[in-house]
Image (cartoon, rainbow, N blue to C red; front, side, top):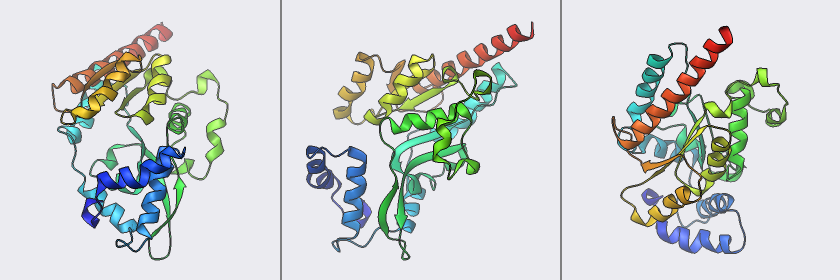
Amino acid sequence: MDSIGVNVPLFWQNEVQPLLTDDWDPVPAFLYRIIELSNSGRIQPVTQQDLSHWGSQIQFYEGVEDIFGRLRNHARTVNPRLALEFYLISSGIGEILRHTRIAHQFNDIWACEFIYNEAGHLTFPKRVVSFTDKTRYLYQIKKGIFGPTSRGKPFDVNRKVSPLQVRIPFDRMIVVGDGYTDIPCFSLVKKHGGVAIGVYDNDHREKWGRAWGFIEDGRVSNLVPADYRNKSALSNSLMMAVQSIAQKIFLASYTYQG
């Protein structure tokens, strides 16, 4: 938004915060204000093409682009039959996320979406992903409801499946998150024996209190800086979590066969 002349701190303070005070949910509040600003005439209208371009320009934390391959390789060394999958569940904007350099690493991406008019301008939110909405997609992952064949079938997530039909149990999931909207996912996965890892930005001290709250409330299994480089605390935590789950799957398979 900086690139189109928007003062971002003032946007959140003067445009979004009054809606929160008026009891809006934070995610639809910022989506609504973005659409309103885009159509206000104060700036050039934000288009679908703009969002795609911004996605292609996103800069990542150190090591992000390499972590996928390293974790996949590590999982195979522990259990060659294991397939490690990645999913992105975000309260951000899907059109941006699908155009990042790492989008191809994910089996699926779920995020907020807009409807666009004939000129490609934003007109209305098509999907809002906030707080407990995120857990819906964990259930979809659990039941194997993802990818192109799952589109246009919003009620499939409610489909009852037997334990034998569960594709990925919660205790085989690792959730990495950094914000309040991730707390329901942290709680759900951790409650069922999975791993919840909270990350925080080392350069933004003002957000450390929020991150520490995840530990104090027992929301996460571990809390580490958002540094994905090899042998960093986060990379090591992810490696250990993958190894632990891979070993559990191997032992369960061995016990079953025996």
